[in-house]
Amino acid sequence: MNNKILVELEIPIIERNFDLNIPVNKKVGTVKRLIEEELVELTEHAYVISEATNFYSKDTGDIYDVNKTVRDTDLKNGSRIILI
Image 1 (cartoon, rainbow, N blue to C red):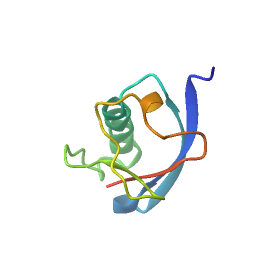
Image 2: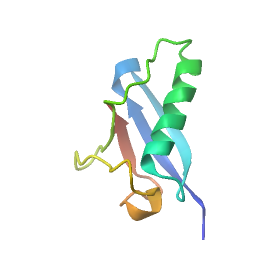
Image 3: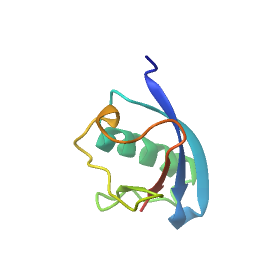
């Protein structure tokens, strides 16, 4: 079984999209934190980490529970998510 999935991440606040491999055995909140930490570096601190941000399904608008592992959500290869 694959331990990562490829998702399309849209980040409206910085007007960027990324294709990312994310681990399925990590909690959504952990993945969000790691991505946000990398965004701070990529944007030279233009992106500011916030506890108020969440991952949303681009297709349904549903919020992903930060306490669930990626494996326990409906995320799969090709899923489109938004960080807002």
